[in-house]
Length: 523
Image (cartoon, rainbow, N blue to C red; front, side):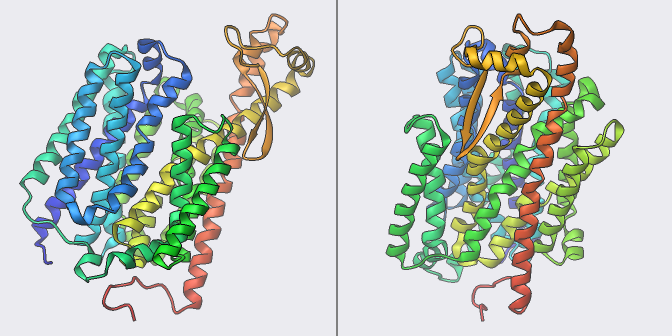
């Protein structure tokens, strides 16, 4: 199906506006958790549930709608996304309880998932000879949303209460109305490359295979168990049950479609685990390191990094040529991230700013380039393989990413406190002291996926009556530096990615070199 340049641009910019709107909502929700706690009188755990309600539906809808998108079409999917985002905005403005706010966040996640499940295959379908470049330009919309939304919130709502802060969501209506209008007026939409070449759905499912379904069922199952609060509170227990569910689901699906799936696709999904953590979960620690340099303006670090990412994604054609394609760009990005993380864990003062720039450049091309690579090598998988890669990343950053970095941070906090006050730590532990007003122990031994570590609540520990008052300032200063140790450990993420991408490149070199697969010309 042929499209004029004007028709392509309309669909691209409509898709751009849709993901930009999702970026607005995400950054607004990221900046108000403490206001939710005050407004709805809820615990930190319940605040986390609100933020999570805007995340996990994204991955669920991306996978589910991938099975339907070729039947219901791109236009219907995008108008449904527009509806869900509008409902989310309205509920946010009128929510008077935790439950109402939960549904507002939930519908935001559903709308975001519908958007991503549609715009990725849509833009791939109209830019078939420039897939990775198209994905980078399209996904410049995410940092554009973060940058614009962050700048709006920090400029007008940084010291506001919830009654005032929630009006920020009115700004999100602008891109929502914009892309909704553009998709409503659009008359011509592409047909997926798989459908146009008469590749049957069973072949799409075989690309996915038992291995792909194993991962999807495992991580969706874990999130389901987490939301339903079943199988205890430990991640290890829930992961065990999730793995069993994934093995059964993957085995049954693989037997039904008579395919184990593409091994390289399975490998890409595994690489998404450290990739999503490196791109999303490390930002919190890095922004904390920016605080001594930028002071009260440290919140602008997110806006600045989003600006860098947006500009570089728009200009992705140059680094794609210089690095030889998506794999070379992904490997180069991993190297930038490694250097940036190590630099951030050591340097001080203004050098932190330059190290932060290096890190921001590194994470810029991860997500869109791996989508481009997936679409170039697995066109028979259509929307399913393309969207599953993103969904796995989004799911695993919550399953592994945040818990992993949180556990590392807790470990280094506990280590620093124990070195500074060994006698008091022993007393707190032996007496089983708890945080005032709760039953939560100040000192606790925890386990993350079979690895044991200790935690000490810093604020509660320093609030103990027998803690030496003259030592509070020095210990507090020491604890502000534990984030550096966390970043050094976090560098293992891009290191593992670099190894993975290098192995894929070596495989292609040994098998005739890298070439995109064009349906009808596979030989």
